Amino acid sequence: MGGLTPARKEVTHVSPTEIPDEADDASTEAVESEPSVNNEARSAITGHAHTGRTPADGSAVSAFEQVAHVSMTEGERRRQWFEERVLAPARIVWNDWRARTGFIIVVSYLLMGTVGTVLVTAPQPNQGELLIGAFRTLEFPLGTTASGTSILSQLVYATPSMLIMIGSGAVFTVALGTAVGTLAGYKGGRLDSVLMTITDIMMTIPGLPLTIVLATVLQIKGNPAVIGILITINAWAGLGRAIRSQALTLRDAEYVEASRIMGMKTPTILWGDIIPNLMPYITMSFVQQARAVIFGSVGLYFLGVLPYSSINWGVMMNAAVNRAGATSSPAALHWLLLPMLTIIVLALGLTLLAQGADRIFNPRVRARHAKTIGDGEDDEPDDPTTTTTTGGF
Image (tube, rainbow, N blue to C red; front, top):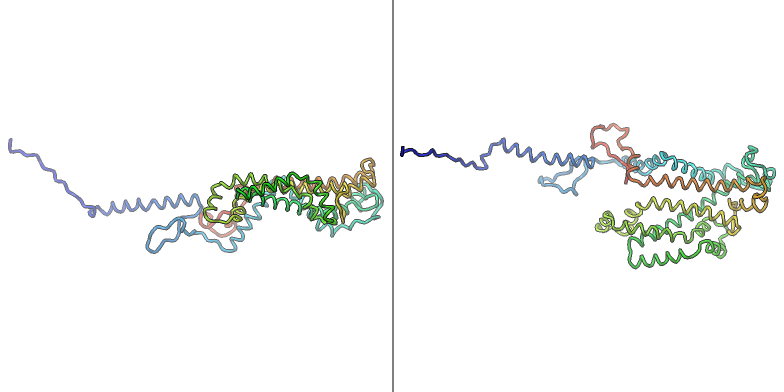
């Protein structure tokens, strides 16, 4: 019994080079499967497969060096631009009843101020009988004045000068106020202090007396473009201060900071990053200033303060009250009410269009109303690399 010894276990050491090929294949497949999973995740997010170019030595390529698998022809780029910039906003406007109504009204006034002056006879005395009521005859559907002039002709030929006044005054106010506000809010410092000091001084000056004085001193001789600017000569100050407060919050946004780090110039950042986010407010301000020009010019013309060289809606109302006693004479009441109704409808159309156009600047709404470039073509519908979705910014 003493000669018994325990059995010895032999331990065999296997070198890494002796691992079976099956293990190598399994590990290789596991490693190679990871990029495919990443590719699928990236494709689900971006809509494009991760199929960029690979260097000749087989090394990895940075994400910033990847080249998209999808390429667009020049015609496709043009159609994409047209889809994003024209068709998508048009669908948004037309699908909103407010924007659609406002658009129809504004276009009607534009046609009345351009085509209408060609189709309608110019107003002149003794075109018909005196003070014909509205909707009495087909020859003078809106009636005549105390001198026999067609009211329809007066309304049509007064529209071009009014459109010029609206355009010049609103564009002047919005352009100057946006430039001052965004520049002061983005740059800050001494430039902000100087611009806001000028803005505060302009806000303290009463607008109506300033307009009357400038119209008298400058001898503008009824130029509608100059009158539109004079009516809104200091209205840009309030808009500039309001936009500055918005720009102060946007200048610290991450995408604005990224643009600064990339070395972009200030005009590029203002035009590309800050102003697009202010467009809904700027649009409403444009409409507000347009309405201010309409009411201000008509009121000053009605009071006989502004000089004029052609017929105007305010001049028509002044003549109806002073020459025909429209406020006390039912026979001349249409001469006063029709220009007033024309003013109200134009202001309403601008307001409705601005309310509906607010959705145009929403990237999600634009993307929802935009179609794809591949619509109507022979591309495979199931291949995600053959169709590029457009819409949004």
